[in-house]
Length: 343
Length: 276
Image (cartoon, rainbow over all chains, first blue to last red; front, side, top):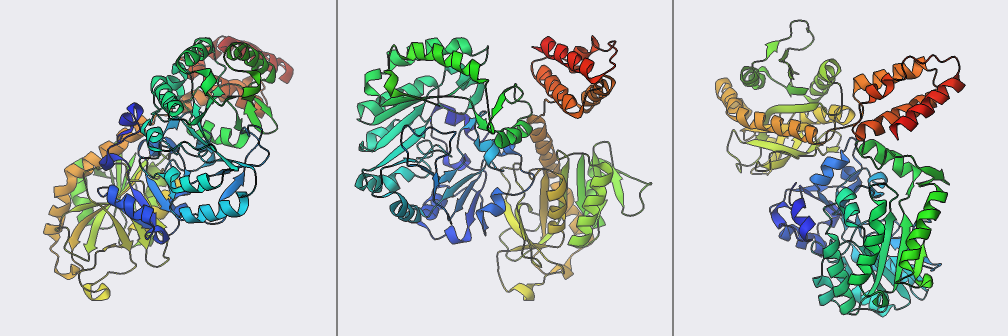
């Protein structure tokens, strides 16, 4: 609904139908990002609020319907700006692993996404006090070899046409070369790479999945073909590119798709041009899983049997080992072992 | 079920007429009118009465979060931005006593005006708020929202306010007021239709209450523990999502006689194998 179909073709959406409502915290009203957005989406109903949690944490929200009628909440971030990277996420060998969230929630609607279990609402929260984020990064990260995941609880490149967060931090990242920044995306936005200078310390991490997975689980995301084009544009413009085969599903309907998928990817993308590969099976904290199981009551993904290990739900380890071995034997045809990071 | 709350009989009369509702003679605490899928209650004026009436109506006719709670009523406008008779879809309610804000999700009426409303405990007059102030005032909405927050999804509460006056309610004519509501009935019907459609589109494919009861009765007969019952419910849901009929799957196990939990476990395993 409301322009979502349009999003599946590209990341552009019509301004008029972009959001159901824009909620604005009173203290966010005077920030430039707020002013620009309210001007850009002038036809969208605007509601002033005291605190974003008054809307975001309401009782009785219907996640799936909100996702189809997504609203935007503009807020001023308080408290903690940087978080230590969680264990279920890959640190790519960096001990100082942090993540930050300029935006909560995502424009895409992936059935397997942990955000559905993490947040009570499908609405997006965009924090407008970017200078405070910078200040916090300066305090915590500067002069420290650190790895910062900047696009974890959202997709910043898909969101770029709404709020160009990456632009606000580009100079900061440039001036702090010890800070290695990963921007993870499923976006097909090629113009981003044409309009930005590649930096040594910025990695664009593309999540690629077989067309069968996109069809089954990744609603409103760009097609595999569109993502491959974006990968190649990023490479040709000089960006460091990471390919993430994550999450991998073990499913009789999908298992057969992985070998042709990997081979196809590396006929279309030069394996010598990519930085490395991330690889991980579908996994989720038990708490998130249980919450999503309730709200996605019609989802087969959450009706399957899984194993629980240390509070994390995933496939049985012996099955993962077997599948991983099969997948690696294909991936090693293209990528050196030392360049593949598994979790 | 669609549950409609109005404060006054003059607000209710055109709705009763439009949907051909009949008075429920078994109920004496409030005037209640209904047909097969709509129940309307006339609460009286004020947020306490509207909250009471909402809860009362829900406790009789409501069942689940998918029920729809609609408040249709008049509001006073502080400015003349909208002509009398305009229906506003309310996306924020502020209780002027507590300062608490409520936010219904408005996923319907895309082409209709959306506004905030202030809910007061007593009638608001022009002299109370000053000239040409862009506010809308009522006396019931926060009560409805307080009840809605307990029982129905946030997109299933619709606060529909019809501008009746510019904070000079003393000059209103009853027949004229009724016609303001009557004129909005096609819109009201459309909104209710949109809400019903929304709930259908988010249809829950998990077990129906009949299937759930069948599975639970089967579990009891098979001497399943609580955990085993939960496992069977999950298996049956999985079977249904795979296109199988849960109760049919269990049919072939109905005649098995189980004497102990160990035997029950064997049956559960056989069912799991059958589904896979």
